[in-house]
Image (cartoon, rainbow, N blue to C red; front, side, top):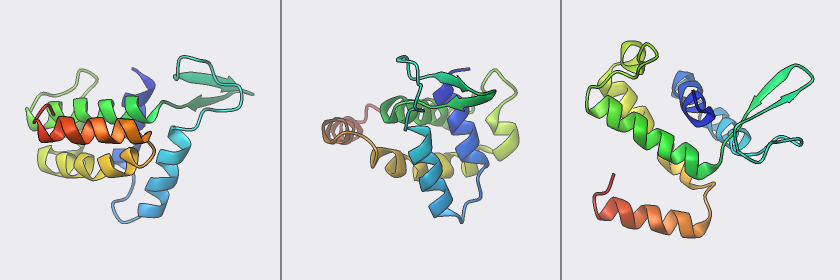
Length: 121
């Protein structure tokens, strides 16, 4: 699975009430490790798997998961729907979007806002 999808799984598993931890996890997830590969995926550092992605790829993974959850389509790996249920997962995913958007470049934020207004997502 792509790093961004795995990070979404991690974010969904975090407690709802710990916004500081959620924001820190997102910050770490979009910050490349010191010896990162250029493809924004994985780097191995002394036996530790550092999974990271770009803010835009993470945002796209959240949108993809939202389409799955809101369309009641279970992902192929056993399903986030089974773990969290449709309504709870959708609400969590919507809440993640502004946290991730805060890490995006201004032009990405503007483009995303425009796309949302045009109902592309």
